[in-house]
Structure formats: C-alpha cells, structure tokens
Image (cartoon, rainbow, N blue to C red):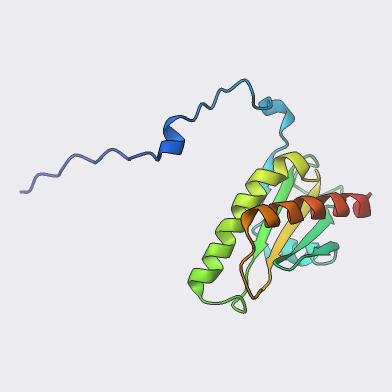
Length: 149
C-alpha cells in the first residue's frame, strides 16, 4: 500500500497576497447589479435581434429582455461568441479570456440592467491592446444605452 503525499498548498501570485476584499474604497455590494452568463442558444439568437455596436476587434450586441422573462429585471447578463474564423484554439481561447476580463471590469459600472450583452470576436490584422478594447467597450455601452432608451 502506498502512502499519499500531502496536498501542496496553492501558491498565490503577488497580486492576490495583498488583496483586501473588505476595502472601504470599493462600492458597497448592494449597489452592484447581479451579473449572469448567457448559456442558451435561444438567448443568443434573441440578442442578435437587438442593437449593435461595431469596432475593429469585436461586435457588441445589446437586447432588452421581455418583462415576463424568468431572469430578474435588474440582472445584467453577458455572453461571448468567438468562431473558428478567428484562428486556432489558442487564439480563440485567448480572445475569450480577454473578453471575460473586459466584461468583468466594465459591466458592473457601465452595464445596462435588464439587457443581454453579447461580445462577438472579429478577426483583425493585429491584436488590439487591452486599454483600447476597454475604451471601445465603454463607448459601445454608452452608445447602446442611448439606443435602447
């Protein structure tokens, strides 16, 4: 019979060691609208009928949910679509990771409650830097908020 080694403790990056989740600088948890991920194909197809904002690196779709939808009206939902036209699996996964990071940073402050947001990746000659994509996403959310009323 072999003895099992004790599990190795997970190593945290330097950014995580100094993280203070109970910081007084952050907004209260009550003011942040709940976020959810869109997983059903029908919801993606419904969002395709909504308003759109096009940039060089992505297309942002926004579609207001019906009043009788099962998801609460104050919830902000988001989804990501990256097709094989973008490139191989490594390129697609990198794009999805960047989109998830963008949405996690921008949607709590600028997202539209009661709206489904979809980011669709676009093939570009060169990869846009994160700050440019963040500025484009913020601009797109402001534009779509005006269009949706």
